[in-house]
Length: 291
View 1 (cartoon, rainbow, N blue to C red):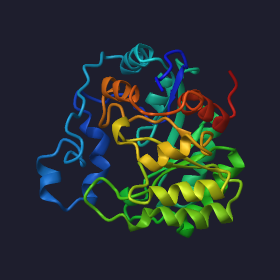
View 2 (view 1 turned 180 degrees about the horizontal axis):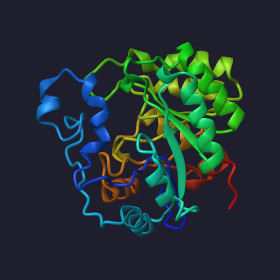
View 3 (view 1 turned 135 degrees about the horizontal axis):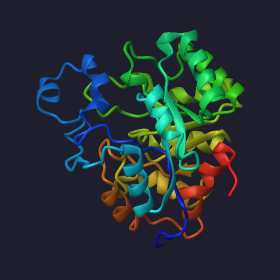
View 4 (view 1 turned 135 degrees about the vertical axis):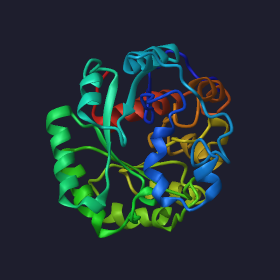
């Protein structure tokens, strides 16, 4: 079924460029990587999978340039933030309050300092989501580790979702801490938590579907996957009983160009009634926004 062109897409993983090659996005991973090929020759830690890593020729005003790219591809709002939430960037994003959804990449190793940071960002800057990359932390923190529990509780109390990487990590370090099965313990103990899986859940995508069927507040976003590689189990679930659970997320400019993402979306076999929910409606409901 063809993708509609007038939805006003919400992209749940997009970033403001830092430089032309955007290597800076991955600096925080270097201490965790022992593989010499990754450290010495790769532009990004998963270059063995991403062959056409985009470069950007952004203007000096990189936020305004990003808005131009969003407009070009019909993206109404984008979730941004990650590891690059600082005072200067927050002021720049505030110029476009209707276009960006602020997220914050947490590190449970920082204990209550991180909980206070989340609360402050919610109070002062309308933080919309927390994100987490368990395998990328140092030391790693498993999805069900008790270090995460204060953060999960804070997300519930502040009424914000957490987007958490699950599945085999792309960079060449261990992934056991983000096995998809670990999510079950979390959503069992925190039934009010809005938990969004990101980065594929492979090779446990069938497990991801099974858990989404079971738990009402568990969702899936398509981040870091080119659309032609969306797992079949996820597409089938969206086209059947999971139309309200699957949400669009890209990976620009960290690994995929907007040109590639949107050209490949044309060929994803979603049903007609799934597209509006996938591209916009489900994210609007998740964040409690109204059209």
